[in-house]
Amino acid sequence: MEVRFKLNGKEEEVTTEPYLRLIDLLRDYFNLTGTKEGCGVGECGACTVLINGRAVNSCLVLAGQIEGSEILTIEGLANGEILDPLQKNFLLHGAIQCGFCTPGMVLSASALLDKNPDPTEEEIKDAIAGNLCRCTGYKQIINAVKETAKEINSASKPF
Amino acid sequence: MIPSLEILIPKSLNEALSILAEQNNGSKIIAGGTDVVPGLQQGSNRFANSDLLIDINRIPEIKSITRTREKISIGGAETFSNILQNQIVQEELPLLWKACSTIGSVQIRNRATIAGNFVNNAPCADTVPALLVYNATVEIESLNSKKEISIGEFLTGPYKTKLNKDEIVTRINVSIPSKEYEGEFYKLGRRRAVAVSRITLAVLTKTQNHMIDEIRIASGAVTPIGIRFFDLEKFAKGKKIEDQFLKELSKMLGEQIIQVTGLRWSSEYKLPVVQQMFYQLLKGIERGSL
Image: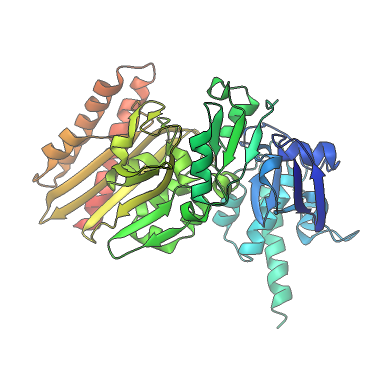
């Protein structure tokens, strides 16, 4: 079937089997391999992408369901060579070790900050509760998100 | 690997019901897909003969949350995230709100829908105990019929409901409880997020002068399906709220659960946990209401 949607800001039209999972469409057709497959059943969050600004597990969405949606993958977050503040802070705070969970983790955090630029620690934990990380112990990730929120807020309130 | 199937995306309820009316046994409804997609992917025999998915996510009639003076009506295909963002649900139906908040993760709640939670009637469906104590009703439509039945009547047995192949659960309706009612919902899972419930309990009470005027008790996951404990509710009616009685009631609940479920390998662990949880819920309500 023909599916039209916006992917990382660009209009796309593809002919695909409707029952292909979104993660497979992204990785195999568009070569966007930043989206990872961990568990394949919606428990680990490694495949998280944003659909219309909301974090979803791309292993639980079928290509036939995305007509007219706006999809953001980790490849669409940076502004060319300039990293998104979240990406920069993940690096600075050592919130990345093996990196497998990172794309999903960053996108979950990004969806949170878009909606709630000044989250509490509990709100950060809730936002990333669906993203498993087996390396960092989460502390560094939470710090990176907090630091990003601080930067956003000081940038929007210069005085 | 997902077997080859077609997907239709009806834009109105009538269109969806027409498709369902024409279809053979190979059609399945998909809403959030958080259960259907992994089921397909893992080759679950629930989808053995499926060749058509009917995506009901874009049907406005089954997506909104509305409130009249005495009733809140939630569209069957409304996502948990939208329900959680709804202030009316949070204020008037706090047990349901809390049950929704314990489901899955942000990613799951952004897709999964309320009717999708209980149309399979899995024992662990988290919304069921809350819907049971609120005496919720479900509206069911096919092309030629429309009916509204209580959630208890809808859920007939483990993985069985009154829903026919050509029907959709269009809305979930709850009468707004008066301010005198207080309650609590509790879920125990192996981890805080994305956990299949081991035990869920919901309790809603109306008290007067330290007496139980009315109490509604429901469990999930520890019973084959979510159920109300009408005998216990009747027994507790009119009793004085005293620590000794709350302990007795908690013990009786445990005994009733064993009666319904039978002894399991896990009973030795779950029984005291259920009793203690229920006692703590009752104590919490007692503290709030006295």
